[in-house]
Image (cartoon, rainbow, N blue to C red; front, side):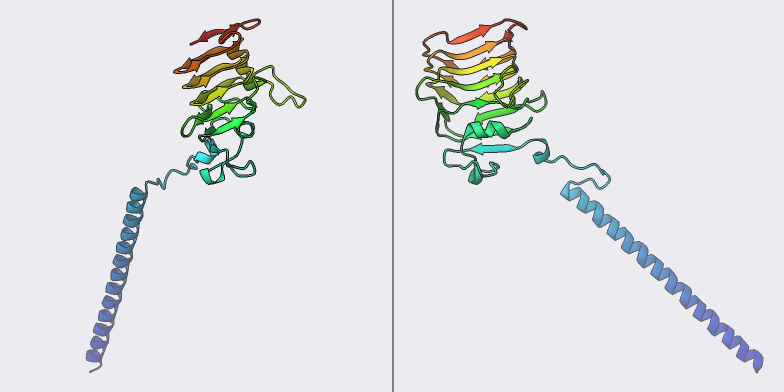
Length: 242
């Protein structure tokens, strides 16, 4: 009788152990399946959002590398300049703010007696660009005095802010009229002009002085009282002007 009872207990214990083992196996399989589903979900999410989880480098931000600024006659220089609704008012203020890689968009309009002095160099990878956003923005000197755009490695005022500003600047799609000098460059290089109109001017439309690797294309220089396009050299020479 005792033997039979013992065997029954042993059988019950064995069945209990088997049930426990089966439960452990089922739980393990459940965890494995859920883990697999989670990994699969993550992989699919990564694929569809186009983000590489294993690339730990910080993605390039457009705002870090370059910015786009807008200038409108109805704008305000206290704005950020970063959108049409928050445009700056004057091109001269805009060129004071930009850094290498930035683009300034001029909206259609007329600005009077603006004088632009570039304070910052661009680079071969990150040129500074001043261009029309729509229509033909006009910079009007009104009385044939002053210079509209100056890019000069030797230029300085009382703050000496403009020394050594020389290269990698693009200017596109604007009209300059009724200044003494439209554009003056000294010691400049890699300055590109495309689709600009300069004139009438009291003296010259554009002057390249000791400047190299500059390009003027699809543009109209006209109606001056002296020379239209001037190439001059003294120290480093002027060459590769096309």
